[in-house]
Length: 367
Picture 1 (cartoon, one colour):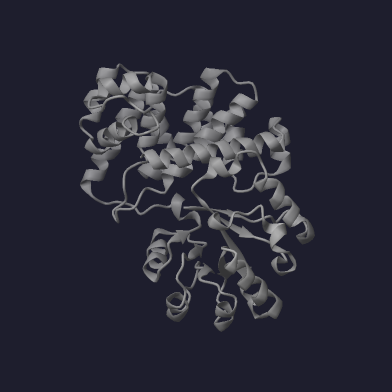
Picture 2: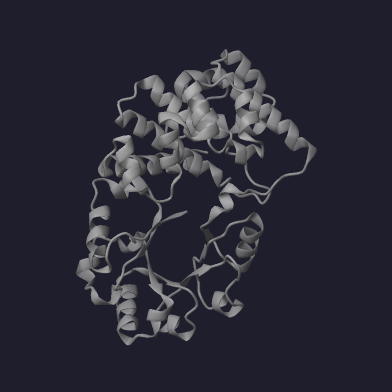
């Protein structure tokens, strides 16, 4: 995985200063490790290496417009950056000019077409496929040699048609119902035993370095003692997304659900919500993708669960205070008016996003 940074809401001449502010935020690198950064710097050729020192070469891939690759000044700058350890990615096909810029990666709009085979063969990668909006397009891009993907394909997963899938959905809904009504641990254990994948992932979590158990945990009862009831519920909610896809890859919904849940909790806390309200906000965030995960209408999912009314309103209609927060965290770009309406300043919002990304990275590692 990688994070893309594109500053588009400010004039070109102030983008570098904005990026410096973002990357200079306390503990940002630690929070986002070990992800790479895909960074677009407007007017890249005009800056000295010293002005880009805030970008760590080992973790930074600089994106270069294809049209700029024909400029001698950009070619010279790119070679200098490559010698300093930066990796370079061209936005679009640039032909022989990409080689003159020492570029080894490609970002390409794959919504309608794919790049030429020659382009893919002459670059080592990693390559980024943009606007990948369907599972079929994802498969085509992966077959073409792309390893990084951006687009709405995450929200439109491949539908499964096996009879076993219906049984799996019922089991997941039953587990969600037990969690929602704070069921006895024994009831949860019985249901988990019917789903070996969930049981495996749970034991993997509690035996991970994150919890540093003195001796291996082998039973569900021990897992409860290690995690505690509150954390157990949270991990189980996220474990629902941990199933691998048919191709063996991780479910791309998992980090998205983790980010939403953590942001909802952080924003609720920033607005003065107590611990119970923060828990409900977390649930609203993590459950907001269940309709995609289970391929079911959200109305059917909610009707099977015993959820707080505020959570139900948020999930069904994005209504009420919690629904307003959910609308905010679902946006790719949060506007100032939405933040103002919720009483959240920009730094609080940025801090919540950074914390959420850190949490999602930890979740993905442990699962």
